[in-house]
Length: 343
Image 1 (spheres, rainbow, N blue to C red):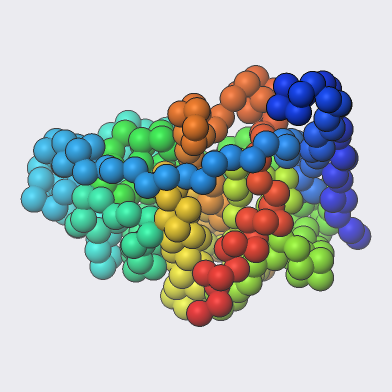
Image 2: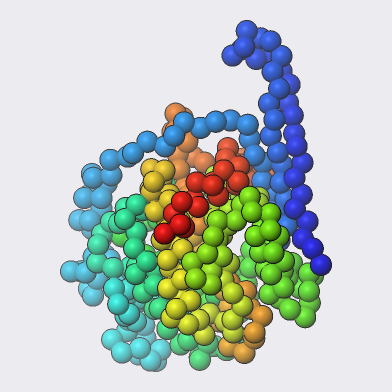
């Protein structure tokens, strides 16, 4: 079976005030994601480069009341009930500490603080931050599944800096587990079932086969994890990490976790090189322990105010029409990102 990569060219012609009202034609494109059916419009507008932003004041001001800094974390963050079976009410691994989300998005909702530093610039992001965060997420999900075997739909998520929706600057991720998938997880599961009902991982095999052969959006590998620029991005940029088949997130090896963290940190440093300080990421995964065709996908999407305008990168197309817009082609983003995967 093959996936459909649908792209429709669009042209608009008008009398342009920038060319003395001579006729001008602008060319764009509408793309449909081959997995989810998501629609993205590539708009023929060239953004100015993003400029550095001085974050000194917002970082210093937010540090004064931050509950995630090490000197106050014990007193200002929540703890698991004794019945959860975690000594001290929190889970720790390396530089990461995980505890219940005081403002939960689901019944099983936790927060993992990534290290002692109140602010880490994307250009300085280290793989160890992600590795330790994934380790405590895994330990948390093991406990959840032990006590709630039907809660197999899991994700690790991040809002980084205020433009992404983060209420706190200190680096942290949110871990969710449920007996029902989120809307996007359900979309992926449905697409995988329609593609090959006997093998849910086959759809990602087909995706990688196409993207590696095509080469335009494929970026490279960190160990066993493949990286690419999404065909129909959900934001200005949309970078995917596709993990190999495994028996679920709870069984990911330490080496594969390091491969994933390495690639994610490279993407984040790429954002930093473009003076992008804010982003979202989600790792869509499963807490099942006995399947050999489970897929894992991580997506990283920057969040910005458009340079020259100071307006959000999200507009009515995304909020009201469930489509996204971008001014960059996925192919040019892949070309820029490849340099971060060459060492």
